[in-house]
Image 1: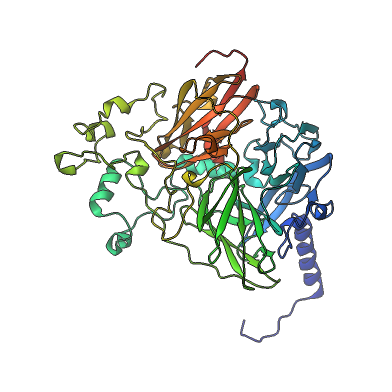
Image 2: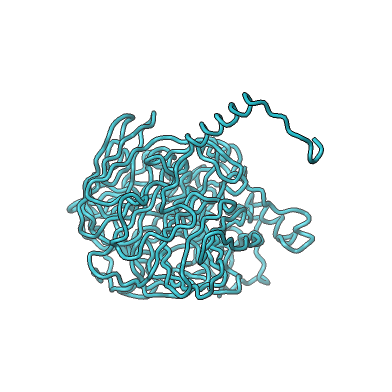
Length: 592
C-alpha cells in the first residue's frame, strides 16, 4: 500500500481485533510491581516492605501455580506462573521467622516448589521422589519451616522442566540483627532465559543433534579472518569429534534473555539518586544459561554470594552460574543511565536493562562480543609447566591416553578413574584436569578488565567447622555430548545410581572433576559447603559451584543435615537427562 494511503477498516473488524487484543492481554501474566520498569526499589528500610507492592511477607503466604500467555521480543507462547505473574512474587522474610507457605496446583500435571539455598527439614525441600511426593493437580501442600539464615535466595519448581516455563521467583531473608551491607537503595535482579519452544521439544532436538542450537560454528570466513582455529587445530579437533564452539546447549537462537521478565526492548529500568549506594541482588534463575554480568562505567563491589556475606571485593565483570546469586553494591555519581548487561557465555545473545536517575532514560545497548573458543585446558589437558618432550607436539587425533604417552605424566593411570562406569554415556575423561578454582571463567579469559574468580572470594566471618576432612570423595561429571547423555561417574539417576552416603556430622573433602567441555553449576540441597581456595576458615561458603570445563574444584562439606537430598547439575536439561544423584545423611552411615 502506498505511503499515506487511507486505511479502511470496518467497525466489526476493529471491534473483533480489539477484542482479540484484550483477550491476549487478559491472558498475559502480570509483572509484580517489584519487577516493573522504573521501580524505585524494594528496600529503603525494612518498614517500606509491605503487601501490595508485589512483595509477599508475613507468617502465612499463599502461592497459586497456573498457566498464562507470555510474550517478549517478538516471541510468545505458554508460560507457567505463580499468582499470575512472571517472575513469581518476591517473598521477603526475616531470619528466625517461622513461615507457612500454602502452594496450590492449578495445573493439569504435578508440580512442586524447592526453596533454593534455604536450610529446611528435608520433608520441606520440595523435590518429588526424594523428599516428598509432589503436589497433585488441584491439591495444596503447605511448606512449614523456620528461617535459619539471611541472604538472597530464590524458589523454583523441581517437577519436569517447569522452571524453564516460568516457575521461578526471588526470596530474600533479612538478617535478625544489623545487616553488614550498607545501602540506601535496593533492586532485585532476576536473570532468566525463555523460549516459546517447550523444553521437552528442545531436549528431543538436542538428543537428535547435540549442536542443534549452535549457530556460531566455525566457518571458512572465520578461518581466513583469523577469528577461528587454525586449519591444523580445526582438523585435529574434528578428528576427535569435538567442537570448540560447543559452549551452550540452548542458545539465543531460541532463547530470549530477560531481566525481571523484560527483554532488551522492554528496557527494565531501576531508579537511583546520584551518589547513593545501590544494592543489586542478582539471581540467575535461568534454565540453561550462564551469564557474564557487567555495568560499563560502574565498579561492582561484591558483598554476598549464594546468600552468604563475603569480604567486599571490587570487580568489573563476573560470571554467574545457573542458580547462583551475587549481591553487589554500585555507587553511580552521575545523573546518566547505566547499562546492566547480562551476556550469555557463548555470546549468542544478551539482555540490557538500565539503571537511571529518572524514568524514560535508556542506556546504550552494547554490541555482542566475539564468541569464545574452547582450548586444550577445556579438554582437561592443562599443559602449563609440563615437560612436553618430542618437540612439544601432541597428536590430537589420537585418544588422550595414547597421544600423551611418553610425556612426563603417565596418562594411562588417569585414563579410567576407578569410580567411573565406562560405557556409551562417557565419551572421554579429562586426562589432566587442573584445579580451576581461581581461573577466569569461560569466555572471560582475555578481557582487559577485572573479572571475579572464586579465588577472590573470602567469607566475611570464619566458618564454624575447622576440622580437617576425614576422607576424600571424587565425583566425575561425565557425558557423551554428541549423544546428549549426562551423568555423575558415568551413571544416570534413572539407571539406578546408588545414593551417595554420608555419616551425620562427618567432614568430607569432595573433588568435582569435570570430564566434559562445558561448565556445570553443581548444587547440593540442604547444605552449604566451603570451596577450597586457600583462605582457610574464610574459604567462601556456597550451595552451588560452577565447575569449569576439563577442570576440577574441591569443597569441604560438613554433613550436618539428616535426610535425603538432591545433588545435581543445575543446567535443567543435564539434570533431566541424568546428571543427578541423591545424597543421604544418616547416623552412623558407613563410609563409601
